[in-house]
Image 1: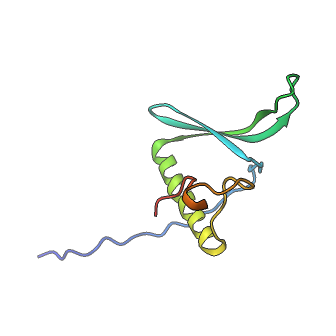
Image 2 (image 1 turned 120 degrees about the horizontal axis):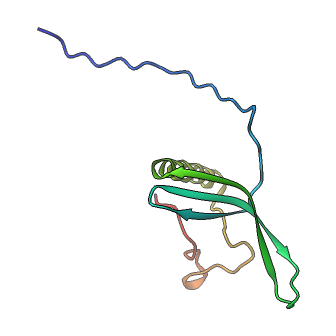
Image 3 (image 1 turned 120 degrees about the vertical axis):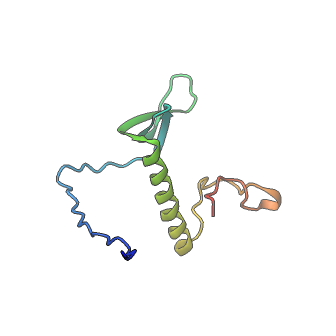
Length: 116
């Protein structure tokens, strides 16, 4: 009679190679999707003078990352965890700094929130 023993898990050592890494700053992101992939364009919104005396912005794309849907879901979960941990330590991140709070009686119910 054979025993049902749990299969042993083998540990894998992960080594991270940062020799080809490039670090860039982004203050905005644009997303595009296909049935198979999500395209993330990271860049900087910069004020630009216009001839019509109206404010204008230019979105200068610095990096493009293309991911499949499973990868983007893992990224979304990870980012949600990172933001939640940050806000638990430091308070809620305000998305519209300098603008009056939205919602009834000046409450903070106006912006998007991460699911708990």
